[in-house]
Length: 439
Image 1: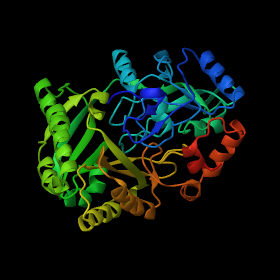
Image 2: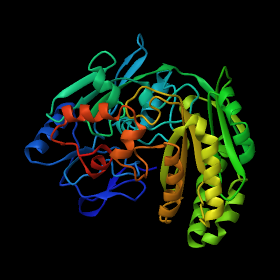
Image 3: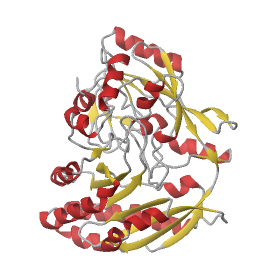
């Protein structure tokens, strides 16, 4: 995945290509002081402010016609505290660089999502997550935050300092301020053994509770138009380290999962009638494999085929029923779905607007190849997800609004009240936040 880019005439576009904006000006501050000054100047000029990371959100959460703050100069590790086992990192640091730096120090985050191109502030602000039985999202690993608020002041928060801000700002949607630094809990570097294995859709659903219980991290991909899945189980290992071989890794992760898959998507987009047959082949392309490596090399994988995505968190107990309804919908709809459906889990957490706030959750992500009409598929899927009180990922396509969120998030009012206090004039407002949080 590439970083976010500006096109002609100062137009900003996201990675998925489905969102664009033309900010009045773009600012790349080299320090917290410069960022605070940019916020104050925007306020004086009557311009809204949004910060953008690498553009991996499929919503317009970072779009603005005001001042676009780009944090690529605010990078690197500030401090490592081995006594408290924390690391404080600048907000614009890509997760890829953070993970590599931590590994050199013999340290690691506990859990990760499946890509690491995002900045730490973008990933946490939108609720990026991986899969885990007891370990939650990246934001759930945060111990403290520093952010510039609407008046240009710098506010720090943690469980003890400004705890009401900390409860919300870990997944703050960019509505409370511009994050400048994040302090994460870390642990000594460890090894994970990954076991990847094809499995039938019916078997996965029948054994889901057992697979979830027996593994620290369990996820799977279901290929629509088939009864096939690929499963992945990650568990801590005493070693020895046995990474995927260079040739085998290139063949499966680059040639098959990206190169051949890209060609298959082109064919499916041009001739939709071929999609079910392509899905049958794709679902059998990858063989079973087992490998052991340091965490971020196991959790993450390269994603070079561009797509548009919707993802909802449903109560974990509702996962099997929700997936059966999704499969039945696809089977009877006449839709041609060329991308697999991704399924992961997370334990309940205490973050105000986390998709796992207060409940054990399962995530169902639906995708369509970039440039392929996705609205009919996503609309039908969203109808199923919302029937189970699903909560959409803040950075992925959805149509929900503040009225809906006030019903599915018991602490929604806490967040909006805090926003009223920190940003009463809505300096950080945009159309997306107006829809999901209210005026």
